[in-house]
Image (cartoon, rainbow, N blue to C red):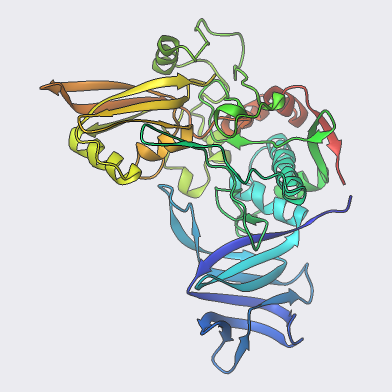
Length: 444
């Protein structure tokens, strides 16, 4: 197998401003381009112009770097953290080719480049390139594995086209995995993997991690592992089938994320009483850290303001939670009377939640659907318990949500892995801790 080439959708807007550093050759007509340009829709075509020239392309065009090692391009006002609480715009610089296409009524900018070049940016975007070498190596391998597994599914047409969600008047159970993209392989945001070009690469650490693990991925029974990861598991990781489609992946089963000996806790978190007790306490797990040196490896830029991820609390008044749930689900529940966990996963994350209002009762799931319903953006995780206070005429005036962890919790826990690396664990030990019965293999 040769090193794959991937296409990454970066930005879709009515108008895109970009800068080509060095010489780029236009694939349509062979003309050389360099400098600042604006791309916009003109009728059914794309117009690319600068102060002195304009070029019209019927459907789309690609700009190829004359020297892939030396040339780069910049895209202005790239949206990052879309629909998350850290959403913002920034300018980003990329290597490889720039493709512009018309997608609906927008222009989409696509970056085309070799997978290893892409991964160098991913591990510098998902965490700091100043991270410890073993942590970067481990993340390089799982980011590569996830990517290769998705490409394999796409090539074999294994994507689940008819998602067996349960949606009716009494229940909305659905999950949100990486979207199928029609005109490119992956997006550049958290919905796939964070990819911010060469903008975040500030030293040689990312290059060294990629080069030293070139072509390596995890395999389980001769199949490339769909290696998932999240920010903080909260002490126990979740299993794949409780977050996405009901398909068991043995290497994505739940593991306890402990530093030393097991604490004296009941860890069957599928039991409501045990889950609540677990969230109330502070277990001695790898991801339970306040060490800013370690956290700075994972919580980059806009993530750094988040310090309460291991155990956290959110409060809503009756008016706030009523309006929030109505706006997010699109149903008028009336006053919210109760939020009842019906089913929990192995990490205590709620899979099915009953919302009881004085006008409507509904069951929702899985974890991301719950997180989206109970936050203007996304609740940190669905591992939480609810306390009702100030009950007047059977209507709670305040809801307190106490939770654990950040993200879906499946696979590698990024903060836990960073702590393991600081404690002296090698990248292979980190991977075998989070992914059961896997082997590291050279895929290409």
